[in-house]
Length: 103
Image (cartoon, rainbow, N blue to C red; front, side, top):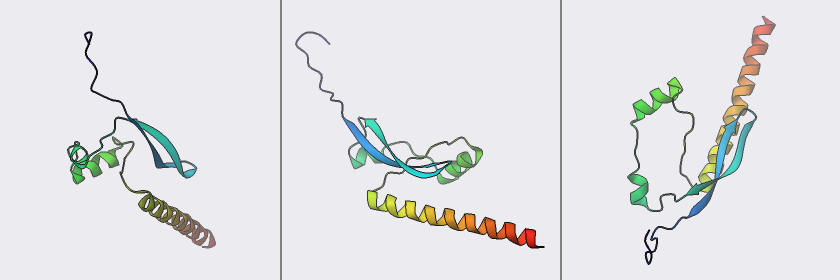
């Protein structure tokens, strides 16, 4: 930049609360995004992947992280659903195991 010129780009940082699934369960953590998209047109112009390609890459292990942009109430609701599914899955596994050991 030469003398007399000013930078017209400003840097903004947003803090997001992210729900993550770890080996010990679900937990919230904060991440900082520098200059995130701020308008619907910028968000919808981000590159996308077809659902079949996404499913294949997810299954093959090529995708390690997924970012879903959502509102807080929806995230809380989905977290509760995940907790219930996880609890039901654990109970179902225990029931199956106890049924096998009773035979």
